Image (tube, rainbow, N blue to C red; front, side, top):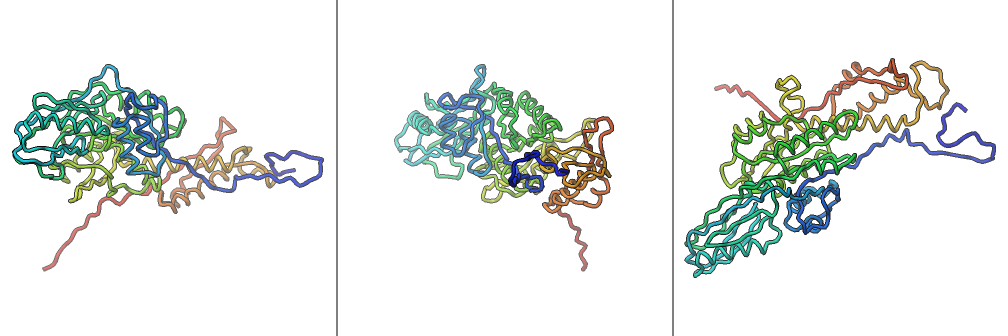
Length: 483
């Protein structure tokens, strides 16, 4: 009986026995997953550190509290991408932290009635204004309107014409949350004058190691992380490196966002160097950074799942509101792309689009400039190639014996040789080429080495050199005109 059966032993009872084996089926698949870290309110029903699948914003408001950071992040993610399965790991506020606060100060009373549109983190609240309202009345009405909008990430209190707006959560991530009026140039009652001071003073973000530990050994392909403080990013980058390594092989790309001046953003980018962390420089976008990270992560996850090698440029960042003015010009954005910061462009109608989704990786282990992991497509494509190789080998040779090339074993035996593995890898590379993930087939074949390990005769080693397909990003022409 030279054929290697999996489940049929030697038998004496009559009958026809047929087993099924999927080694030649050749179909590999994976379910891509995204995970969001963020803060919950005590009104939420899901406790800290429990990975929870979320499929609509209403669930998020129930699980993590209406108006919570996670409620807002999930709403933005699911609006931009309702396809990729997304799990959420809630964090409690840091008990030692402080909440950011800002002010809305009414400096002159209205002379006509109308409606005031106050924007909190890019979300509009309408306030009815009477022509005889005093300064204190306007402030009281603004505070009441904000508090009535329970979906907002803030609460408000008015005193002596000043509205104090306080974040629902503690932590520095809410610093810079914008307060202003008439983002879309809505008319304001005559005579009314108001000044705004964005939220500041927040301190003490939660520790993301709680969320990292909660991920366990589940493979999440994309992580949305709202925090950009040094300690949390260090913990996250360490975990990303570990997951990408050959002993875990559950690589993930993490998305964050940073708001600040051009100089501050460049300095921030220069302080990081990870092929798996992509930080979008928002240039003071009206949408809060934790929501920008969720939007960017959602758009990237949807499209990278379809094709890891295809660039993300021009894709719409659904739900992201850019700065009202003072948007970075091309030269400024270009400089940030040398500082590890991903960039976006703004259409005339205010639509935000990905310009170039780079990682923060900038230098190699020797501290020298290195562009090998510049674009997010590189680690994403390598991740998919590795997965397909692993899955194909595991499916084709799940319980095989190992022999040298040239062994005269019987047909149908569950035996694999280096030559068979080499043929499998070559066939798989042809598939990568057809998918548009790789090129240079002949060179790949010539460079491919597959051999049996000298010390461990139960092991096959290989070295291959996949030539990853690049992305069409820059087109340059020189026109020499003739008169």
